[in-house]
Image (cartoon, rainbow, N blue to C red):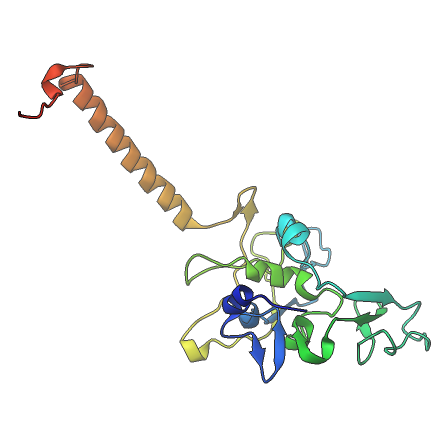
Amino acid sequence: MTQKALDAKGCEPLNIIDGVRINPCGLIANTFFNDIIKLTPNSFDSENNQLTLIEEGIAWQSDLDYKFAQPEGFKYEKCSSCNDNACVCSGEWTCVEKYEDTVNNECYIYSYPNDSTTQYLYETYPDIISPIEGVTNEHFVVWMRVAAKSQFRKLYGFFDQPIKAGTKLTFDVTANWEVKSFKGTKSLIVTTTNMFGGKNPNFGKTFIGVGIFCLVTGVFFALKNIIKPRKLADIKYLGYKEE
C-alpha cells in the first residue's frame, strides 16, 4: 500500500511507529472507546423474558455502505467447522491462527495486505475488534463520527423489548478506556429514545432560544414597518456625489 503525502500529514502524530504503519491511522481511530459492556443474565423485560443488549444496527447505514471498508486485498474464508484440520493459516493466508467466533461457534481464516509491516485495527484492539470485521465494526464506526463538544454520548447498544418502570438493570463493565490522565469522566446512561434519537435537553433549550430570538426580531421589524414604513423608491434615501 502506498500513502500520499497529504494522507500522511492527516494521520499525524499516529501514522508510522518504529517502521510499522498503523491502519487506520490518526488520533481518533487510536483512542477508540474500548470498554466492554455486557448486560448480566438476571435482567428481564416486562413479559419476564431475558433482556438482550443489541449491539448491531447502532451505526449509520450510510457510513457502513460508503465510508468504511476493509483494505483492498483483504480476504477471508469460513471453515466448515472449527475442528477442520484443513482450514489452517498458511500459504496465502497471513493469519497466525484461525479466528474463532465463540458467539456463533464459527471459525475463519483470513489475510491482510502487507501484514508484516502494518498494524491493523484488530491487532490494536484484539478484545473488541474481530479480524473479520476490522474497521466495519459498528462500535468503531460510531466512535469515528466525531462529536462537536468535549462532553458527548455514543450509542453502545439498545433494547427492542418492553421494560417495566423501576426495572433494575445490572451491567458488567470491563474498563479499558483510561480517563484519569486527562481528568475525564465516563458514565453509562440508560434512556428512552424516539424517532429523533435519545434525550438531549440542550437541543431543546437551543431550539427554544433561537425561536424566541427570531420571534422578537420579527415583531421588532413588523412594528418598525407599521409605525414608520419606508416607501419604495423614496428619493430622500438617495445620495448624490457633490461636484
